[in-house]
Image (cartoon, rainbow, N blue to C red):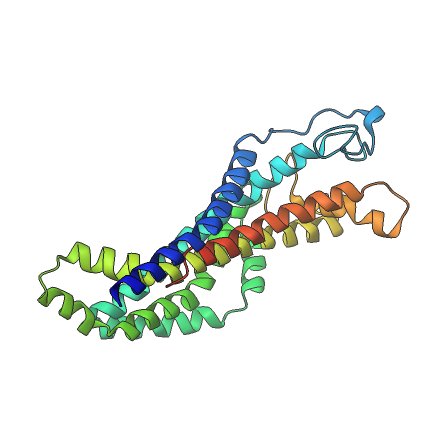
Amino acid sequence: MKAAITRNRDASQVRRWPAGLVVGACLSLLLVAALLAPEHLPDLQPALRYAPPSALPPFGADDGGRPLLAYAQQGARVAVLPAVAAGLLVGLLATLGGLIRAMGFHRLDRTVQAVGEVVGALPRMVVVLVVALVLPRDARGLLPLAITWAVLAAPGAMDEAAAVAERLGGARFVEALRAHGYSATRIFGYHLVALNLRPVVLRQLAEVSMQVVFLEIALSYLALAQDQPSFTHPDSLKSWADLLNLGYTSLILDVPTGHALALGLTLIGVVAVLALALGRAVRSR
């Protein structure tokens, strides 16, 4: 029996390796693109107008002959780091929710639940738009909106983490481990967080990060449609929404911008694959 359990555990670890490699590759790609993003787009080159990837590797050019690679890098710079920050905040709050339930702080737990019900009932998109409008023009950016989204998403993550701690036995689980002589660091850091809360926390982290990226694209596309300054980035930077806005015209007009649409959808796909792969890599046995 013990040998069978060991074999199953080893097989489970092997199945996680592909998903972990995908996570590392996608995250590295996005972070490198964000770090290498230029401050401004290159100068116009009319001779390369609408150039396909074969004429201007790797992604082709826009309607002004500027490489779409700069669009991809600037879009990563706008979205990736705030999305990661929002995910980390949700992960931290979810871990806190699980620890409160496991430590048996009933009054604090009830208070957190009551506040969470109020915050979780708020319409996220409306609140984010209000925050975007209230922020001073020079303070506008994706990070405040990402933090707002994370706070609104945190109650659900905290409830799920608390439910995991409750299924373990809550305070009884902690007392049982203390009776076996385990230290507080091993009880809370290893047995509770690393072994049991980790799948929930990291999955919520990945989902919120993905949602923030989609939020940035939606807000930027809304600003482009209304011909207004973006809520999420200065005018000197381009969003992945600019790629979609440039590329969708190829679907209704005879304009050779299909490569821009393909690049925008591919970048969105990379973010979605990253979130799904992280959830698979950390799923419970």
